[in-house]
Image 1: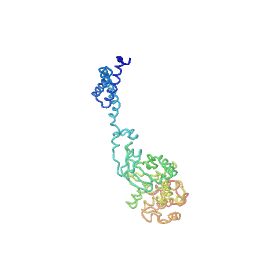
Image 2: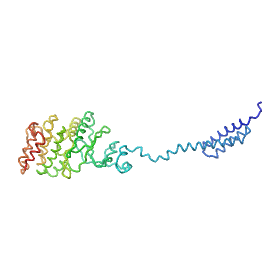
Image 3: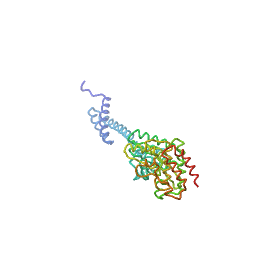
Image 4: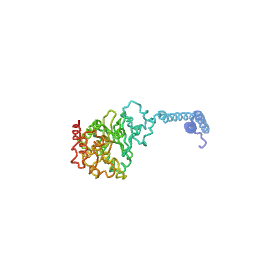
Amino acid sequence: MNNRKPKFFPKVLGGLLIGGAIGGAIYWATGWTIDGAIGGAIGGAIGWAIEYAIVGAFSGTLLSLVIRDFKQTKKKAISSPKQIEPEPVKSSEPPMLKSAPAPKPSTETIVQQPAPAKPHKEEGMWERYEIIREIGRGGMGVVYEAKDRTLDRTVAVKKMKEELSIRQRDKERFIREARTSAKLKHPNIVAIYDIFEEQGMVNLIFEYIDGKPLSEIIDGKGKLSLEETKNIMFQICAALKYAHEQGVVHRDIKPANVLVERSGAVKVLDFGIARVAADTLHTMTGTVTGTPAYMAPEQHLGRAGDHRVDIYSLGGLMYEMLTGELPFSGGDVLAQKERMAYEPATSFAPDLPKQIDEIINKCLQPKEEERFDSVKGIMAAFNKII
């Protein structure tokens, strides 16, 4: 029984499996059909041992071809996505730029080189705002001219000092004041468009003003005429009147916070936030920011005061515009203010009407109740000057 030849179908099955397995393995390793045929031949040789070499060779080669087709199909399925891939930049495109209505393709803004004056890159904010140049530095931080890519307009970016963000309480107070100021909508007030907090730092986006600070104009001219002063004062008073009616007090009126456009329009900026920033910086660093010459006496004593602190500051501002001098300077400014130890404006500019001295004197009263009740009183007094 042990010498009986295997039957036909077991031989075919043996040649098929053994030849196909070897031929398929060789083809899989090399990827060439001819090697599959060789594998089939080897399978046939093994099939010869079981007396059906032709069937083994044929079946091995056939299975090799089947495996080849399967492998090629699988290869195509794996490789096809890689051939469609040449869009890798899209996945990193900022969401703000994808939704931007600007007609330029987004790739143009992505490849733009950052301006040399640009601060360290922060994701999100700096993707939208392209810094063009630095336009000013002050006690609160650095101001840049920038391009809002989304709305295609020029803006001013104020990057606040790091000290303003160290203590959470101070930062929240500053942001709260900035949000209040952002609600003010008036032609003589610089608009706040947005407030950004990124990587713990606060940044403000302002309306861009094509003009100069009043401080720079006074420095350049020495002093202003009565007509120039009257024109500027009326516009500042209009801004303050509106703000006071909304319950907002500036608390830091001075020439550096008044911008004069080329057209002659006047804009007041930093409502509320300048004083908050100054208080915070004083607490954190021990340094005094701002100009004490314009502060009301109650502010020197640590009291916030009401809208009449702005009226006091207007007196000092008016005095400087008309004379080119500060009413109070040198040491112990508070004592000078309490004694009202200053020279009348007409002593520096004799051609000024005496009513100017009266208006300034009423603004600079050390007691709040003795000042003008509102900026409307100042405007009315100015209107009486011929």
